[in-house]
Image (cartoon, rainbow, N blue to C red; front, side, top):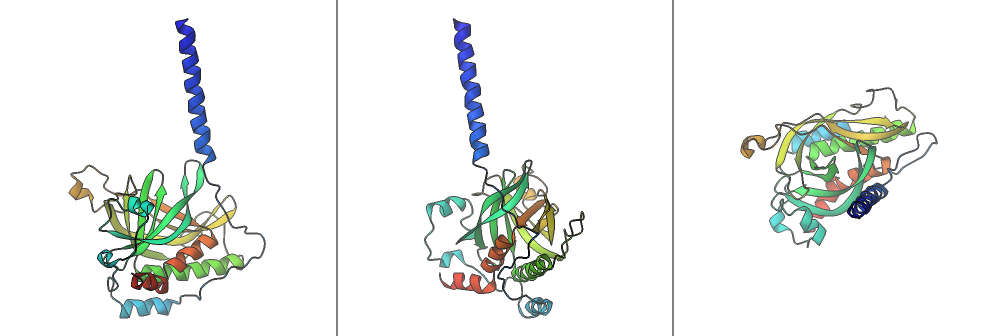
Amino acid sequence: MCIRKNAIKLSAAIASILFMLSSCQSTKEQVSSDSYNPITTIETEEETQDDEVSEIKQNEEPGSKTFTSNESKAKKTWSQNLLTLGNKDDFIMMEETSKIITKDFSGLVENDANFLLRANTNLAGFGCSIMGAYFIPQFDEIARARIASAAQQYFDDFENKNLSNKKNIGKNAYGSIDYKINWGTFKSSTPNNGTGTGYLGYEFVKNQPYFIIWNYPFKNDYYEDSNETTTRESAPVKFYFTRNQLKKLVDTLSEENLANYYYSF
């Protein structure tokens, strides 16, 4: 009798585990992609020229534009407060959200992303989950201008069928940028941080192209302060964008939009 009861309990436990696994799989969002076969169009901002980037370098010192969290009059939602629970002094959450694609063991995964400003600096970016960790890449105005320029080149190359699916051809097709990344186990606490060089390009996945922003591991500046309880460097990071997601990124991080958001406080 006891053996029979144990067998029933074991069967119930197995059924419960299978149900949980199926539930997790069913909540996984289907990744959108761009069809590279038909000729399609997309509305974009005017192309940022290289001389405009040079002008930014000459006339605007990094850090000259700041976003001060103490001046913010905008009320945060419950979810925004949860996101910044351990980062209240570091980041200002923006209302804009988007979908950004990353890769895990099963392939491409579409994640929710929150746009944000870094308080008291000129940095702006987004927060997004990758492989169980939370990463926050942040770009200054020079990097943002280069992303906008690279995006326009990508749109043109897409329309003109100039994208190559040969391995490693497109991964840094649009140059490099310097930026900062914060990361941590939880999105409400990202003490690990580092600054380094990343790359702008594109990558084909299942015969469909995606714009990519990616980097090799960044040195962790928090390592020395953590009594060696964390890693010396970040994992390599890569973000994938469809054209609509890329347009959202460029529009949200445009100087005009950031200025409007900042001065609306």
